[in-house]
Image (cartoon, rainbow, N blue to C red; front, side, top):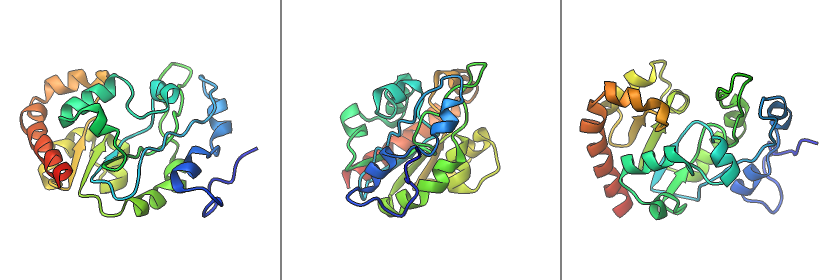
Length: 206
């Protein structure tokens, strides 16, 4: 039975609890190669200083129940220049992907995209709860298209980061799959990351 997670509010539950109880994609996930059940991973509080808008949890995050609990998270924290305690402090950092559940793998073992139903159901309410966040990191094309309305690819959007800073920094996904991308685009580590770390330190100190 699908829970009515899309109703305006479930009595006695706050928004992260509502999201954690969502089972709207149960049938969709059961039909994937992984055949898994939904496990939403909401990680935010009210009025954070920093918003990390990503794509969707991977399998390790699905199993751990904590966002970026994998090598991608290690790389992202290194990019940001923050430790785990700061990264997971929900009073300061909100981690809100475009889909809260692991979407699963297809028959070839490739990651499935985040179901658009998740963003349609939850994202406007989450953004309203967060309020005016001083700094947003947009990780990957799905988040960049939703927040910026861009039709450009990730490389072009990230290369144009100065047009969005200091309130928004578009980033590639910190997956190991993007190691070759980092080598082809040395400006990312040489120019963008120092500016990003400086801005993160500023907003977290305020």
